[in-house]
Length: 396
Ligand code: PLP
Image (tube, rainbow, N blue to C red; front, side, top):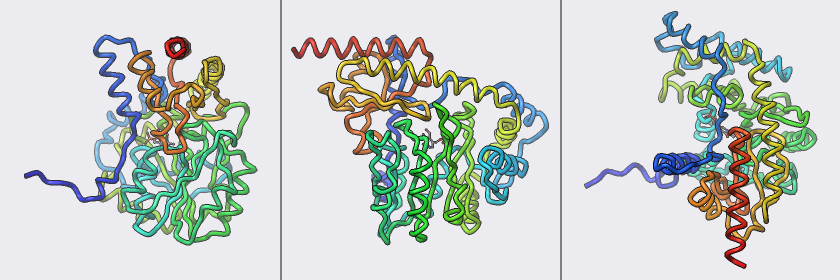
């Protein structure tokens, strides 16, 4: 006799990027030469002064629990950082330090998801949104994110999906998996529409807010007073400071929701790793040149990836304006996206993720993360071209 978890676990999903990573590692362990463009994490090390701050915190005796909401200097540091970058005024009391950006979406979706309610989320989008919505029993309402809009949100299309049952809408710009950035004019329009639906909470996932190209400026949703009292900001250190393994994120909550979030913290992880929090403070208050360096390097690779993809038979790729992903259209290759991603890994040794892993509107696309060296990216593109040409020749 076995024991089973409650039925909600039949509905919870996961991130296929981790399965692809495991498969890529297995193939590599068998001696295959694999180039991993699958996983979404910077290939840089965390800047040295941040690492040193964690070591110092350990030596200084920061070994115990901290407040569940996070250490006060860090909550103040987050507020100061948001003020410095966007001119938004945030009370440090509304900041919650969480173990990774993901935790904010987990909390927000748990808070607003229940059977009979609807939660809107971008599709293609980060797969955990839908997974957690399904887990709560709420109805997932995908907001189509379209190539013809540059993978930006369309305010009109989004607003048309709101119903009296909508409890939460999830916005993400710059976006995973598309690299799409929603222009300010469209955000303005979206916010003006949302202002007319005061029953809807908003979670803005801005984890890629410092990864913008071509002079784009990030629009922080906290800068709109008309929706401020129901907007939850998701952000963190993982991408900006190459800290994915540290598990450091933060959220800004409206005052009336903070206590529910704090209780979820107390009921699960208690507090974030203390030395990691001191490292997070060093990241925000120390020199930002590593962020600029990484951004410049991502930009170089972005251009190489887009040019290389557009030269492949049957592939076209718009230029992403943010994050570190390209989302080429592969519908003219004669392949469905997931079998193509799988064949590229098994046959050509290039790990990518099939678009449908990010939602039904991801069919016809694959995601490439360009968080890899330019040399590897060029090699991967060469292999992809050889693969497609070989298959096309075999078909002819
Ligand atoms: N939000 C988006 C859009 C992401 O792409 C990711 C990570 O890939 C996260 C949140 C989660 O970040 P973290 O690793 O800090 O949990």
